[in-house]
Length: 174
Image (cartoon, rainbow, N blue to C red; front, side, top):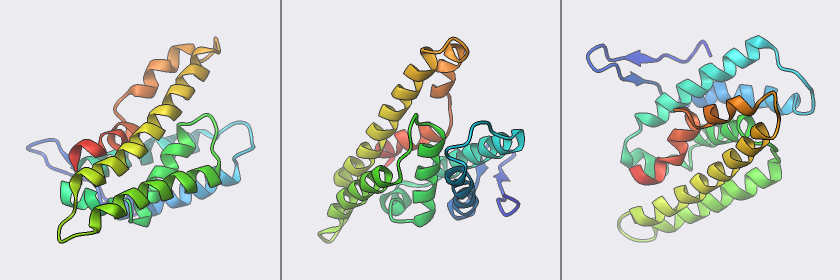
């Protein structure tokens, strides 16, 4: 995380972060999360790191232009960002299911590169697959939170401006 260098535009308040920097840090966090997948409890420092990485990834995606978004799904750093979103905001993570869904997304986006130019509508369709998957996971997580007395008040927080919001909106920005 020390290698992430957010740049603040003091005039606009916009924060810029490089997807590669965030992706590398998130890949390490993903390893930690998958290794501790079956353990109960999370250290406060891990929660702080997850929150920081979520925010930095959201900034990185927010400032990606439409041309870069067209090829983003083929970037291994982006894949780690999507994996991180799945690990941190779904009721159940399964590596095979993730890989299968991600292949479906990249296969769809690959179809956009058949001619002399990139078919943006097909790229958008690929990101719609991602969006629908995230929405489905978030809906399940919301139902899970709402069904338990101790967490029902956190249901609305799932939908606040974070990494998932940025991933869901990618198809609109192609």
